[in-house]
Length: 263
Length: 112
Length: 165
Image (cartoon, rainbow over the protein chains, first blue to last red):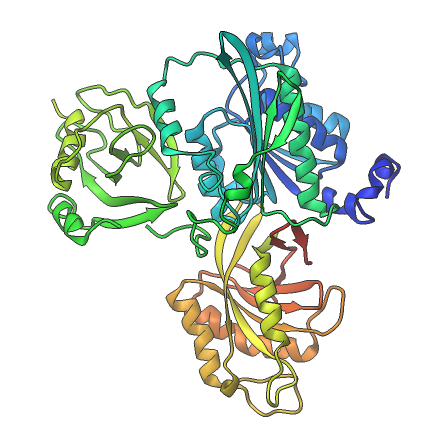
């Protein structure tokens, strides 16, 4: 093991090799995705696929890791900011950037061993999960929201792991027809979603821990899904009770839901 | 599953229509559907979702944006279904219609 | 780069089948069906179904671990044709570590693979050799050189992502 990774040798004798040989995709390189990218560079992921069509704007600077004021002026693409940051930490890594919606580079996404979703709508998550399930790819989703409780802002977030064969977002009650309908009704009226760097960082760190666990198996525990709630006001992460009641095997994706369909 | 009789009805407008399902949602694939006069392209693959999806009671997806004399708001772009990208414009059709009426109702948005 | 990916439950089912004793053959064989996708770096093969060769399709041949008849070969060809699948001949080497194809394996694949490629030339077809804990695979197809190509990365997906190759 190189000196760079000796401090994480407890992850297993082969962990550095496993991480170096893995391909991880991040869909959405905003406040959450940029944190994830930075940490994955530090842990030694050897190959990255980065998807985001947007460029940095001033309103992103409060939370987008790696973004600078100069990037705002230059309208630097978010995937370029992440790439630049990644290779500065890990010059040996191979980083592919796709400054488009992931749907326009979907064949590249199939190569990923793990996909991390940092999207900001239920509809987008629904589509992404359907696609990655076809290619037997575990999906980790992170997201945060701010809503009013008794006129006070309350920040919450989630980290969810969807593994092919195990319970999906619908099995876990995260994706429902009701929340898709409500989201569609708000279309165009939502404006910029409230986001802050520290809660994004918490969610991203948990997600990175789960990526490392998936790729190295270092904890030797059995899990087919994960659903963690983050209460950012109370600074507490709890496991969702929905995990206990979710079916062990997915009831929405058939066992033969594999590969490109024939229409 | 969509009853075969419903597919038969749609074959009046699209002879190759066939049912398909993805992640529990039923669709009717309408290959090379002819669009109303004045549209460009005039023929395009479509996907009819006769049930609720993304906040709509039903939706017609197109394999590409169809320019029409009516100038619709294509508010859904590159939604991924059956590993293809689809587009849809903002348009609501009432519930309770027969399949052929539903399809015609969705195409009405492209017709002057 | 050619990748082969399947669920851990499928790998477990394959290993469980290959472990079963046969009345006279030293080892068992089956077919793994895969969906094939093109990706920027090459090909992605997704295992989705395992079909064991039935007991009475094996031939008595003490010179090899296992041998099967023309009906079994037609089963594999039928899978390739009707399911438009990439089909792998699967057997096990009873040791730990990454296995390799033996000379007998190579000779048999030289005879078997053209059958699959001929019925379904747009797909890659191959041999998957499993050990106690790892795997090796090689593929052939019209898109490759006649000697075929190694599958660079074989993974199973379940509790964690296990690299088998």
